[in-house]
Length: 582
Image 1 (spheres, rainbow, N blue to C red):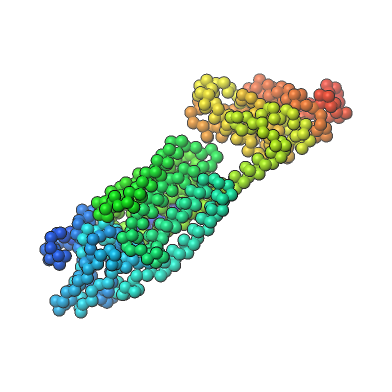
Image 2 (image 1 turned 180 degrees about the horizontal axis):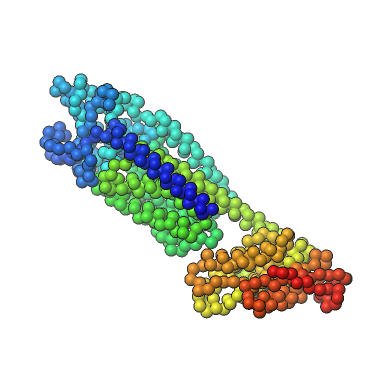
């Protein structure tokens, strides 16, 4: 399974890389390739500042795009020679936008917009404004006063269509509505499961999906169509949703446990990361970040530790997790690539390929599907564990005697009910003892010894047709029924070593177990009391240890005469132990 996960991840990364190269090539030849920039003086009007510009930079650096006043030079005609009638830019804060067009006859017209005046584009994280109309346009400039981030300037583009057409990207809006509708399915599933089982994993997954929906509504601009909010409100909600997603992602990953996957350090780190990301969102919503380019860079920088923590968590998952956990790597990879690239572009004025948003949408879709698979598997495991527990409770007649460390039944629980269990078909008796357990306590400490006992108990209790009992110390008992009891008991004995080595750090030795396996006669279930059977299984266990440990000694008891109900065993030719090869 791990090999298939790696192959799927490699294919996904190859697909993303090919798409990014294609998008980059399209960006190089697109309408925005002729856009150039210049930093302007704050003194005077935009027209006066433009008159003093001597050079234009078509490959701007971060200092240029972070200037308090930035001019953008645009081609006044499209590639087909049609006059430009509208302009777009990326969403963000700014004080004022002045769009100036000049014609061949010397006519010059300027339109000035505030953030509240612009028209958000439904379907994309952009806004649009009308371009002044002049006869035979030869010059077109846009001047931004105090642009709040580099994304505003990097997404500048022009169109021959008027505002009524540009303000709605019908195809992207429709695709986004379909994607959000798909995300609503696992959200409703989470709500239903949480209402039934009250497990926090399903609550966090539901919140994660809900935050993805909010993020997509913000990035796509559908939130504007639905609520009618202004562009500054839209941008602030988008920035806050990023922090909320970081917080919920940390909490979801913290609760996404599969049996055997424990990491206390990352437990604490993810909890701290969630609180930190949530605090950033509250600070941004409260206006601590003032909307300037410097504040936007500070906010992006502040969110990077959360990305680093989630990435480190994925590395840990790949290293120590099972196939279900490794699916998370495939789900998170496109999202983390998008956000790292987006933050890097904002911090260092990098030009991302146009149309990079599908990477975000692809990541949200893949992660939602794969995390939903994991949640469904977790729910199925919980159902199975519940069904097993109910079945065992029915078998034991509601018995409550449990070992406090492992949660298994104890000797007191099994002693008085041995005959009833025999009548229900439990005719194989396996006595298991951990080898050299005292050395584990002496070398690694009693805390590690307790962990070994807990893991051993989980392994022995994993077969639903078994009843696992802790008799005391490092000694366990298995009562088995059904087909292949001996083979199943031997499989569990060998599995102890593998699971203990995989789940417990700090052990100085391989933990093994010896087992005495006794198969009782099915034709006389009422015969033989617990003490008698235990003593004979204990002899087999002693033989296994005497012959070198880490092995099984098995025997089968056969009856060919009348059963003795006094002690359940006759020392006569009518009864015999038949050795069985382990």
